Image (cartoon, rainbow, N blue to C red; front, top):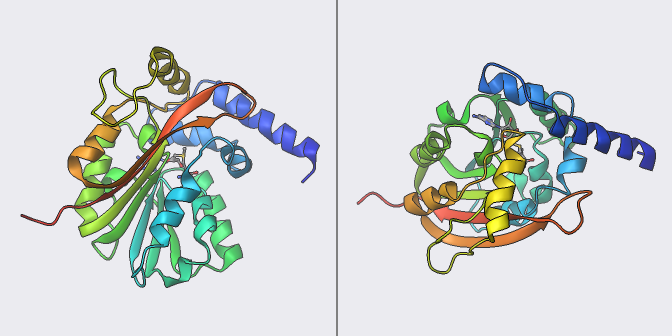
Length: 251
Ligand SMILES: C[S@@+](CC[C@H](N)C(=O)[O-])C[C@H]1O[C@@H](n2cnc3c(N)ncnc32)[C@H](O)[C@@H]1O
């Protein structure tokens, strides 16, 4: 693609990020937001949604993944699977679950192009989804938890379908609390107040509570807190985290 068509795609995406999101239901609002940016989604989000490759590679590189069931909740275009394509064939099944038909269409094209026979898309609400196998070994949320109104239910659903000892991986934007737990980052007054307002325009809701709830529900394997850059806005950096947790064994 030429530099000019990339630039046009970027400005089209920025227009859709800035315009009001319309729709009566969550799915209608998601589709209203994504339908006109789905073709440029991957190129633009590569510069915005950081830490995704590190998370997926950390999960895919673990030993004993053969035959495992992985559910990518809010998996969108399936682009995150590109970074682990050399490991994909070992998994039993990978489900990309999403409510946006436009993004899933891109994912279906990718699956066909790459010949990923063990990857399937499912149009469904995360809070309701149970895989045909009934259970999963790995569940991921890449920048999707901040977009789910009922995110408590989404995390509960992930825990419900994970096998005991199963792994949850989350990467997402957030802001810290004013008094975070010991050892966690404390963001500045500006970061704690500016980023939630900025992202709320796109129905992306930043807060400290998702990370706190993940911490409450799962045993922590690792937590990484970083500041990421934004396309076209030099100087500003937005906080994001990568969380890997394990479902507790029944007592
Ligand atoms: C910012 S995008 C991230 C997509 C992809 N995971 C990535 O890293 O590029 C958030 C995704 O969550 C999906 N989503 C939001 N709420 C959902 C829900 N309740 N059920 C299923 N998917 C949902 C959106 O449609 C969208 O594809």
